[in-house]
Length: 99
Image (cartoon, rainbow, N blue to C red; front, side):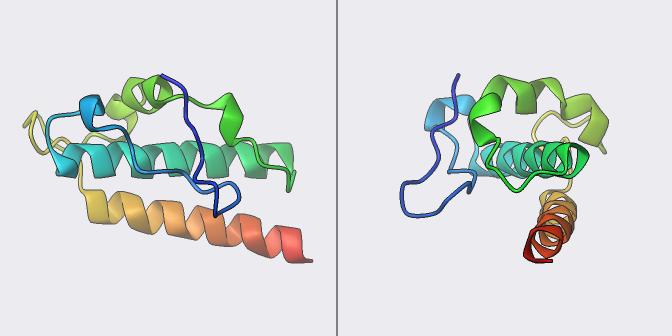
């Protein structure tokens, strides 16, 4: 399942499709995971180019175990913690690109 970025914001991970998961909580978690994966890749590659097109929602789903904090299938991770991690990585990337 390909990721199509929002037209108005360059390289911003869009809202996930409704069929990705049954609850908004899970979809928001998968979006945060994808944000983390994209930011990590940007930092590894040391590039300011948008690499979002290289990622799929399936990649976020595949990384669930890495971010899982619970065996509860309805609450497998802490979304706020994932947001904080994604925000920090994106800030690091933005800082590196403004230097």
